[in-house]
Length: 189
Image (cartoon, rainbow, N blue to C red):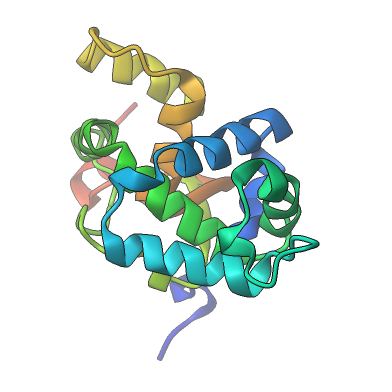
């Protein structure tokens, strides 16, 4: 029988808006649409479908066909409210940033984070888990990233977003025992 401790809490994907600056959200959306030709056809269709269904651009019956400068503000408005739009844009952004995806995945694995396989479709989840390991703040993880990959020119925002997406977690509640094995939790500090 499941207890309250066995239950996992999720926040819908659009809860990420509380952790992203408006200028960074716009940067991510523009990045995705500036590189739309770099994504697989199936992913492009999925993104078009979400835009068509969730974003309204005045003067266009199909919002996905509108030029990015016409639809950017409407996409950003929908990004605030739609978990499906957020997850699709983040999945697309991750697919464009394959090197960063691999590097962050390696970093998190080396720090004993419990992760879905890198190829898993995270859009199928109900949202982000709410627990985050104590002591693993974005600055600490960014410093560890640059120690591991000193040649990287990626900024803290992109590393942090990739951590959130790959881990499926937002730093909402902190748990000092989140990724400890039973042996680690018994060792003196």
